[in-house]
Length: 339
Image 1 (spheres, rainbow, N blue to C red):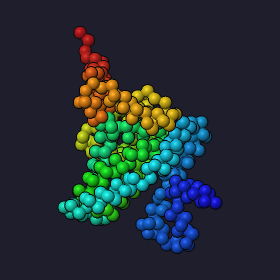
Image 2 (image 1 turned 90 degrees about the horizontal axis):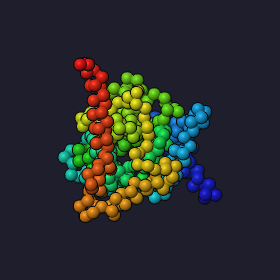
Image 3 (image 1 turned 120 degrees about the horizontal axis):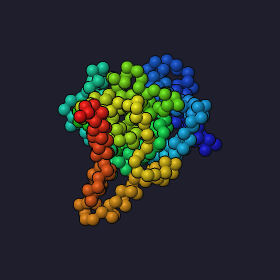
Image 4 (image 1 turned 180 degrees about the horizontal axis):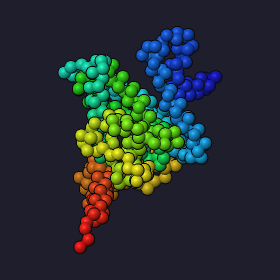
């Protein structure tokens, strides 16, 4: 009986319906008009869309079974070993950093806008470093390993990535004056939208969302971020407001002439849990062991993926710059008048 209760709890928890069921059980439907009740109705949206997306995959005969299988395994592993770490990190940082903030921004519409801009800055830093520092890439690469895009990818994370991300985002937000209440509200909004932008083509063919593509970061932008095409590599690090990508010149629209190729550049078996989850860590350890001298060993840890101690670098920045230079040369040759 205890096993069935645990299974029931896990299923309702995954579907995000636990709180809504509790409200219905108590019969106080007026609770749905409160913040807690509204949140209980929003939580199930992404899991239900995921199930619909999975069903449509079979209807369209594009089931992406390998992606769902691996991401489901990752979800189970993370539930076991990383369940409370991110919450503990956030709680600890609130206790340490909130008292030293110069001011407190509470929940009002104008502070919410301010807070979201600050949150996006913290998110940009965590996400950018996750691509530009090899050690952090080892934590983040699990999320980029799937070679198809669907909502299950939002669950594909190495268990330590959440604590790493929240440590940076929470630190930035608290130091810039966000109250814990405002921080948690933004976390909820951002987490929900951050899951939605992983929606795949089985459910949403064109991820540009019309005119919104010019205003916010859309699923199209995030598909670009997950691409291994040279044009798209290491772009679109924001989550909802793409202001910081534009400020730091990492913004990239989806080009209709360049279809997105998902995955990472390292040769890997995306259907192998161990390679998806630990492959980049193994590769880093091998590079560190074989690197000559302590300085080179350290550089492999802190330099971007693709850095090589002999100078044969294949970093995303160099690959993308080479590609853009080649495209520019081709275009110039096309318009150059014949002699």
